[in-house]
Length: 200
Image 1 (cartoon, helix red, strand yellow):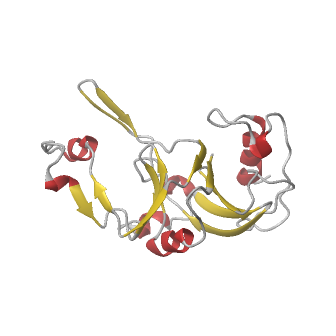
Image 2: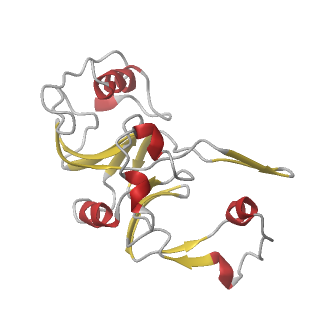
Image 3: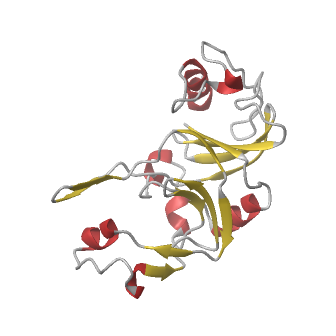
C-alpha cells in the first residue's frame, strides 16, 4: 500500500482542522487508487466541490490538482521543516498546518515582508515593523497563492531544494508550501479565489 493511499484513508477517518472529513462526512471511508503514483484516481472525492480543488500531501511533499476523484496535475513541493525557534516569550514552530483552506488571493511577483523570526534566525537585530529592510523581492518566487493565516503556496528562489526524490529531504520551508516558479505559475492559472485546498 502506498503512503498516499494510507494517508488518504487516514484523512478520511479523522476530521481535519475542525472540518468534517472528505465529502463532508466523518467516519471510515476507504479510498482505492488504481493508477500511477502521481496520477491518482479515488473512488470518491476528497473534497466536495464543483470544479478543481487542491490537495497538499505532506508525507509525499506533492501538490495535486483534483477534478472530482481524479488528479489532473501534480508537482513536487517543499513543506515545513518542523524546527522550533524561541526568543524570550516568543516561540515559533515551522510546520505546515493541516486542514481545509481556501485560496484567498493570488499575486504575481510577490514581495515578502520578513517577520521577526527571519532576523532572529539569522542572528541579526530585528528592525522596526515598518522598516524597508523587511520587504524582500524574489524570496517567494514569481507567484504566490495565499491561503490565510500567513500560509501560501508560492514559488522559490531555491528550486533545487524541492527536487530531491526523498520527500523528507524537501521539508525546507517555514510553513508555506513551496513549488518551483514554473509550477507555481502553472498552478495559479488552474485555480480561482475560493478554490478549496486540503492539506494533510
